[in-house]
Image (cartoon, rainbow, N blue to C red; front, side):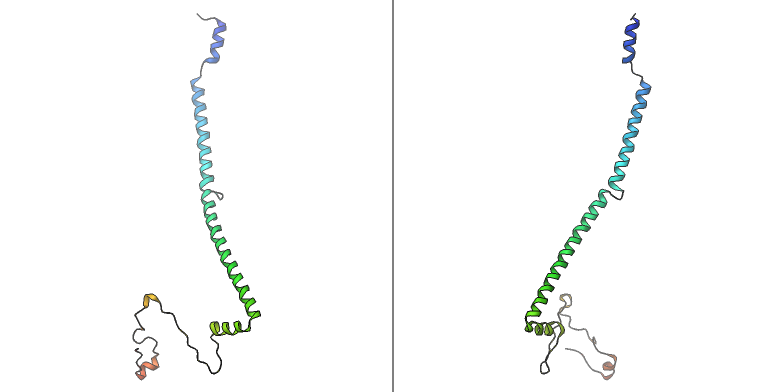
Length: 141
């Protein structure tokens, strides 16, 4: 039979299975709660990864829009500088953009044709007003 002293030593080596099982359950519960918290913060919260990538994409689009706006501003500055320095440029732009002309000139305006409707010259009776229909005016090419 083991002595009292050796029994005291062995007492510290014994494992209480009930408390070990309870500890495992507690640790498992802690990991589950921590996992749920991490998943919520990464996927569903206001600072989630999904929101981060959406904001990053929006930021990229806004930066591209800013670059386009800066390019437009630069071209307008160049145009303003050209108009201040060159009076012929003023006349050219007045003719091109505003279709202005001198008294003895004729202006021809070319309307671009939509490629999807190419070959379909105005359908019959397109552009005829009701007064022209009454008179019997034919609008065929």
